[in-house]
Image 1 (cartoon, rainbow over the protein chains, first blue to last red):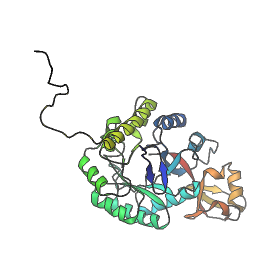
Image 2 (spheres, helix red, strand yellow):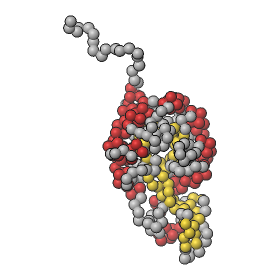
Image 3 (cartoon, each protein chain N blue to C red):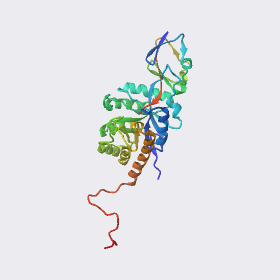
Image 4 (cartoon, rainbow over the protein chains, first blue to last red):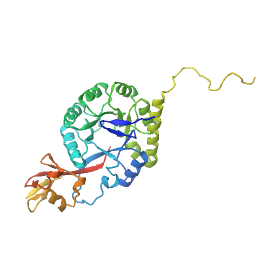
Length: 257
Length: 66
């Protein structure tokens, strides 16, 4: 069964997007990305170290021609900073597919939706394909879709918290109402969380800390890859109905007395 | 003259264009993006864009992030 993952004008095979932060070093980052089978990685935009320009760069370990770089605006707390960052990202690599996140608070890293909406609207007008980190509020998600974003990325729970998806109902509502891809971003702690996101019908999952902070990141990357595939296949299969009484799996007829 | 480079004062002996400046810093221009006084400079304009006294320059690249 063909099951292509389409974001904007691009198509991908893997529905798992991985972040490239928090790893021990760049080699481990590259190994984890490879094990995850991801076609897309998120990256941050930061100042070059002027005092040591020979320092290895992410691009030396993960080839942007083979893996799609999704530049983010992590650390931006207003729309202006986010716009500056993504305009630079676009010039750096010619990418117009970007991940917008405008944070509202350092403690929760919860999105500031007012600033996010302002930035998203400008970016769409400038020709960016914008994937947006957002709250799991169906109204805010609808507003983003109306602006014309390429994908909606509601948080499962707080960034880096590993708390999974406590509010599955909202994610389900958002998925059902959206015509653009819905990708659970943030909060995934372990493989079952990723599988649940996919079983809810989401189009993809973004995972960073759960892989990078596992005792064995490479094995966890493989686990996430399998979980996303399992969750997707489970969703496409159409699960059995739940009932409140038992139903024997073995035939009752013909048993010995 | 002096420019502001990635948030710090940086002395420049003479006026130079961005291409020359990147060579001087041993930076591969295919791996970075440059903002001059809050406007992005397209890569094909590096050779014709001269840095002047008190310019505010940001040179960025992609690093690991979620």
